[in-house]
Image (cartoon, rainbow, N blue to C red; front, side, top):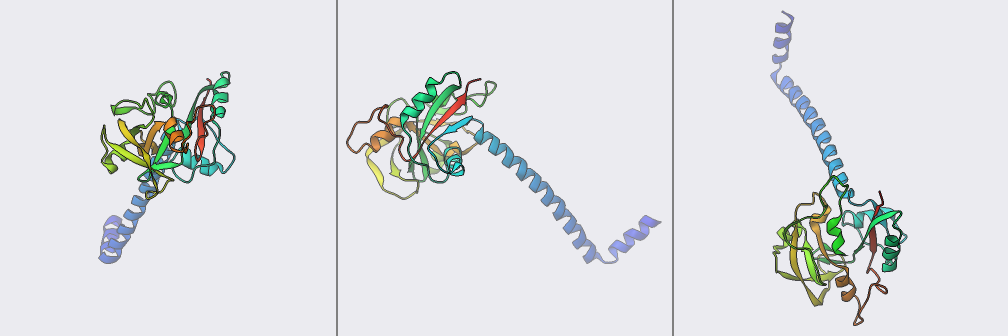
Length: 235
């Protein structure tokens, strides 16, 4: 009897009841959406930061440092010497692996990352596969070879064997380094993070582009317009 009266009372004003049901449905949907977005954001942050056990760079904003190195956003910090990488590697009691990352240039807005082949051996932990795996091609071997992320390949229409110029700075439109062309030798599998938008190349490529006629070497090399060393603590 009470249910019947309540039902009749609800539908005696159908517009009010419909609006009430709509508001309740939207409230529930919004709650579910917020929870899903929070969970997805957390998974994304974990996937992006897991490979970076420790970051070493020049003094400056730690927020800017992480945004540039991990998320490929914001401006890079100032230079450090390659000797810093050598010193990290020499500390075998504390450091298992140290990999240089040099920033400062881009390709149509995608970050050019100067590094070394060892980056393809980095694992978040021993139970997981390599962080950067190739879907096609091979790792870079010589200067001005490039391994590009999936987003770079799709949005720029690049395939194995294609060539391109890099641009000074991180803006999509800037002065091109037309002294040397890069050649795509590999395309990354989906990393599940920001490095889908990376263009990886030997660090010597970055040095030679900024050497201004001088032949750099690893002792004298400055990691241009920000160099960060990714180090993994010794287990």
